[in-house]
Length: 41
Length: 531
Image 1 (tube, chains in turn brown, yellow):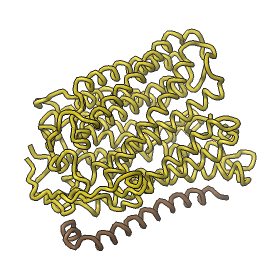
Image 2 (cartoon, chains in turn brown, cyan):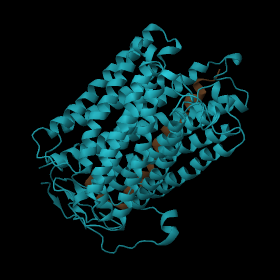
Image 3 (cartoon, one colour):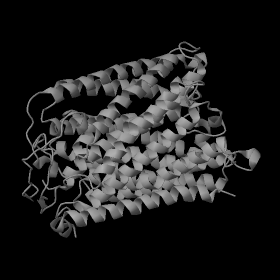
Image 4 (cartoon, helix red, strand yellow):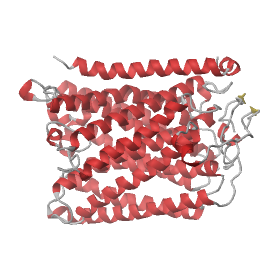
């Protein structure tokens, strides 16, 4: 997989990087909002 | 020797110049350098606050500062050292080293990388600016416990926003590291061939993503409690101040490992190099790191044994804390086993690493003592705690960072540092750090509370010794700055290998490496740990 990414290089890698950033960012934000919401009465 | 086919170097080494190079940089090496320089500056800002603290505690009675300012110093010293010195230093090293260790051309998200860095000076401008405000800086301790923290004056919203910004910066940095390691590795660089430093950083990045939002949530709730009429932590409105402690330490304990794991990674790189042997138990090191990270989310209660937890809760947190000693013990065993029968030499990085193994273990043992519930009732909130976490963070994390600078600075600058001066720096640091912190164990056992500007006369002698150690340690670090500047400006030229025993992709690049390295990926065909 790693080899393939490098051969096809830029665009595919960029897309995967952006997808990673979005997913991880979403997880972080959900944790933040979830924590606050869970303590609301 | 590792077999690395075609480690390509870009010879068209175009480099932007002037202020734009740094302001708009997307180059991992430049951003890494900025992180490291920022961290060094913050190390001295936080250090100067420590000097004020130790000067005030040199004798009983109030000498130099009023108690409110003293408490501000204690609070801001901790925030600066944790979020401004140790964490950014780790991120700086990650920026510099991860791409060249895994054969990537840069970090996965270079623009986000730039933003992660440039948020930090603004965050610290907010935080440090509070010291000059009416009512002074935050003085509640870095833990920001309500209701005390809600008494902070105008500094309060600045403190909260500074913490938010630092959290955002750390999360973006972590996303970048994870994306880089998972997507940008060179062909043949399988996960179980990753250098330990990279492994520890990936795990740290996951810890950051899981724990930083929790801190951000907690401080947002503080903000709304103070300004928007909510009662998350206000007992009068149906809230619970102890809830904040639970949430804070759910972040706070993983944070300890966020500071410590990259240090473990550094030591795991350096010891094999200078023992000229592969790291003992590579796989067990990876699993131990992951175990420590997972367990760190289940031990937060050991910071609050005295708040009145149910006995089952206290026992749970005590046993979980004891459990963390197992993977940590595996690591210490592996470092010692790596040195066993190695052809060791004792250059500055190795000296700092050996000191780390010994002194971090002392900090670990006092941590175990604090983790025993009934015993903690005596030690809680005393100088024993201060001694414990400084052994972990100063002679642990900071010593590892010093080791890493001496280890990699020839690669970064292309010049060897002054070994003789570095050894003097090592001995001064080690001796003074112990004079500074070891007596604090005795002060704590004798009952001296932490976070106080004045104390009973029976604590005077140990406090004087501790302060002398503190001043000595502080002055010794000026030597470190001199050694670094001298090395940046010139010195004996470093080879690309730098250290005879160094293994890994970073040593295949020239010293200093080209501005754009691995623009075509190297091919890693055999384990990099091979000797």
